Image (tube, rainbow over all chains, first blue to last red; front, side, top):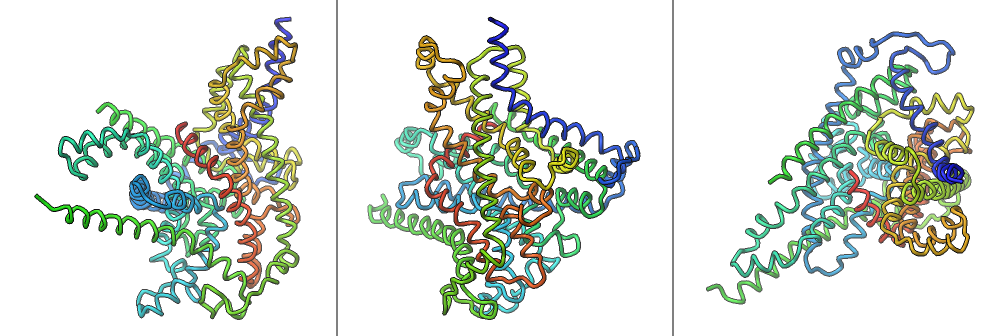
Amino acid sequence: MRIKSTLENYLFVLPAVVIFLIFYLIPFIWVFQLGMYEWDGILPTKTFVGLSNFKEVLTQDNIWWLSMWNAGYITLIALIFQNAMAFMLAMACDREIKMKNFFRLVFFLPPVLSEVVVGLVWQWILDGNYGLLNAWLLKMGLPHLVKNWLSDPQTALTTVAVVHCWKGFGWGFLIFLAGLQTIPRELYEAARVDGANAWASFKNITLPLMIPVAILVAILTVLGTMQAFVLIIAMTGGGPAYHTQVPVLRILASMRGSSRFGYACAQGIVFGVVLIIISFVQYRFSKRSRQY
Amino acid sequence: MKSDKYYFGKKVAVNVIVYAFLIAVALTCIFPLLWMFSSSLKTQETIFRDMSLIPREFHFENYVLAWKQGGFGRNFFNSIVYTSVVVLGIVIVSSLAAYAFSRFTFPGRNLIFYIFMAAMMIPIPGSFVPLYVLLNKLHLRNTAIGYILCMINVGLSTSIFLLKTFFDKMPKELEDAARIDGCSKLGIWRHVALPLAKPVLAVVVVLNALNVWNEYVLALIIFDSKPLMPLQVALMTFQGEFITRYPLLMAGLTITALPIILVYILMQKYIVKGVTQGALVG
């Protein structure tokens, strides 16, 4: 009876476990295995090459490190620009304002759209010859600002980063707003009675209480932005030359472009380790700041 | 002493700045979508010259062309099928598992649960490479069922987390009563637990539906044949073909975005809940 009941319990988790084993755990193990082979993904024979794929990623693949640098650049812009924007908008919406729900609805509109839709629409707006942005700049008498935003090596990466921020600030906005709403109003009233002005209560109440939330948003921003790539495929495809390449695009290119499955896996592992280190450092940092 | 007038003036000034800021950002959020819609109503000739938001003529036939000639009708149907089947699958599989994690005891329960949670937090960029190999071996590549199973797996961990958290807080009395009445475990899950979990099931459904509808990279590597592709991949293929027919592309983008916008407007409450709850996991 007891055994039958336990078996019955296992049946509940069985479908989830089976799907997870086949589609998560096996690929997870294979990444590490395949990383040590040279294989085109088609032939039945693989050549064992040990750690040479990893050595190549770490020491010889300049484009890989360029793509890492690009992702870092986009992430830095997102961390500062996107999150500052999200925080200011959350502060504005936390006040007694009209149409609060409308603003909240609109600010989360870009995040629910797909990266393909967002990328292709912005590519059309930013088009060098027929784009709306350049047409406006001409009309406003600013012809010197007209650029091939996405095909000029000087502007491509920053343009992509800005569109990424446009797509992403709604996440931070929602989380910041939820955080602000947990701050008890009495704290502000008490501060006002004590004679604190708006800036003082912002500095002494809002900021310290929002630091854990800000760190959470920062971690989510870094992990999300470092791995972003579909938006970039839709806007530039990684070009011009390699100016908007990012790591996941390189992995995709190793697999589909040069048919080097083992190398693609090695790149994935290197990148995964980098991400884990980054989030670990941020986690430690957040733990330390929470003690104060 | 500063006068009341001073404070009133200051308050008005602050409010003006706040509203100007909010409205400006709101406009940048909406405008690209309006431009997309406006461009979808122009012709291949006028689209490059007519820079007005409201086109001189409304070419609604672009939508018919995109639907039929562009093939987006087929891809739209695919996206609908993939999204509904995957969401149904996730709801059944994850609610069964979450219910067991919350209510039953069996050896290895916590271990299995933690493995699911760890999977949610460990990033494996490039996991699509071995997934491609695996599906090839199973002869599931370029099949609908292969894509559906992969996508069920993608949504599993988060859904189990959301559901288990809900079940943990849900009172057990009704289930106990049903058990005394002789209801089986499966019966209690189906007729007592699931109906009570409706609020969180709505979150799970909406979040996963958005996720599947918007998914791109797995669909890209899994499907070779265009008649099987969901919208996102078909849009990119269309954009890459010979000379892009921009009005049709814009019509395709509108067709893709519209269901999401509608679902979002109707289900905003659940999305906000899911985002704020999901963020707490990290």
